[in-house]
Length: 78
Image (cartoon, rainbow, N blue to C red; front, side):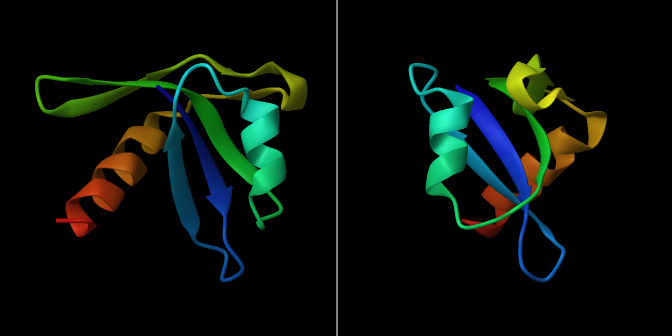
């Protein structure tokens, strides 16, 4: 799976997870937020998210804090 972490209108990070066949740029164009904070690929292993890679077009890479942001978003969804 791929992901984007965007900055929402209140300055908070908001995460989006989507299929690997969808381009980061195409997904980014569909989102109403302006700034990309983190991007890359995400895997769920042993109950934890593991982020790697990036979004080369914007020179954005997976950051260590992206894993916590994704985990927090999924825990709130329960």
